[in-house]
Image 1: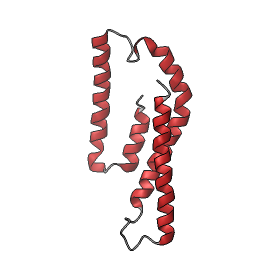
Image 2: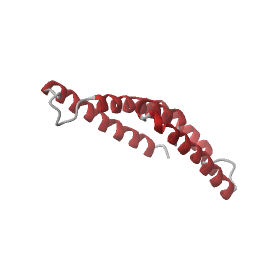
Image 3: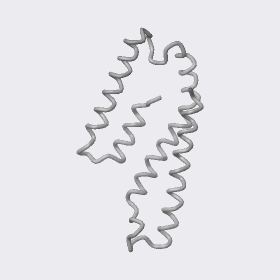
Length: 120
């Protein structure tokens, strides 16, 4: 259930440039792990005998969950740029905006989790 373009988007928006290689390393390890599972199981695909079901499920799920992932990364980016809760720069208006963005972030987390759970 991993889409490399989504993970790359999170990296580009949120990760310190000095740490970008870590994401590449994790994605490489995922490819190697998938191949090891295929080799050990003797299957031709990581989804095993359920490959058609997984593909159909992904085609239905991806347009929704991918969009939420993009919004979530943007929310994280803007939240990180906002003043800390104990900062004198956090005006009452900014505090309310921050609260709304945190609520949106939590909803995005729940939406992605629900979308992934229902897709097999």
